[in-house]
Image (cartoon, helix red, strand yellow):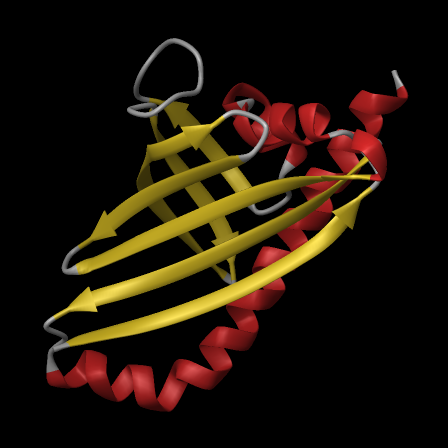
Length: 159
């Protein structure tokens, strides 16, 4: 048995897919550009690609949490998928970029999922009780992330 929590949000960004991709993959500047990221430490070196890893601390919902995040799929300027694990829970984030207006703008979507393999009784109860509220809070955090990415990408394209 498994428990899954999923959220999807998207927004139009008035910037090119190249600028959006730069913001999404420029981990060295994530702490400056993403308001929820309070600390980021690269584990690997080299360009953003499958196998890239980092330790990230985020402030969300009034608390800080640190996760080790790994890129598990990457199609530059189109899609990236990352994964983090905590105990028996796997967190996956898929970001998809779709060019709009002949590349002058981008539809940026994110699909987040948290899957718990063989949840214990407390985890099952938390999913039932806190699930709907948790989903709304997750969607709000994802919207903030997309807004931050949009702001930084628009600044890049304005240069």
